[in-house]
Image 1: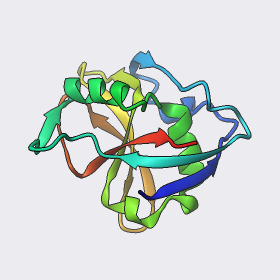
Image 2 (image 1 turned 135 degrees about the horizontal axis):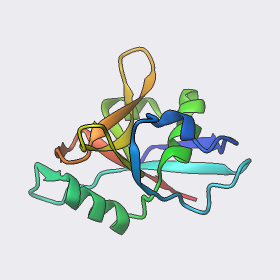
Image 3 (image 1 turned 180 degrees about the horizontal axis):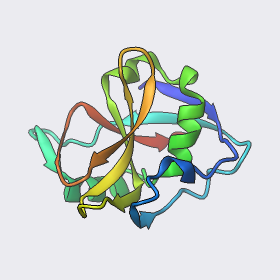
Length: 141
């Protein structure tokens, strides 16, 4: 399994959120201490025989897999994007620790995706189908 080694940034990641969102969940792993070094792994969440799952199931799987990360880890990974394993470019990295509702009441989660030149922070609809091109991020150390 490929990994990324990153240094946790001092930012909470709050600046990543749209100020018009209603934040409905904001959980962060307590191991995200400023200045700590982390080894991260991209974790698949589909079970054998599944092509995709809905957002509600994804939230359950994220909890089961120990991936409660939100905006602070997104910001840390974005700030260290040069250290992200190139094999992760094929995936949308999803962070279910921070969930917000947009103006239309769509639940959204933060993500990191590769656009062919660089990583960018996105805001994906949670209540959609999630397939094999998405990964959850877990702290390996």
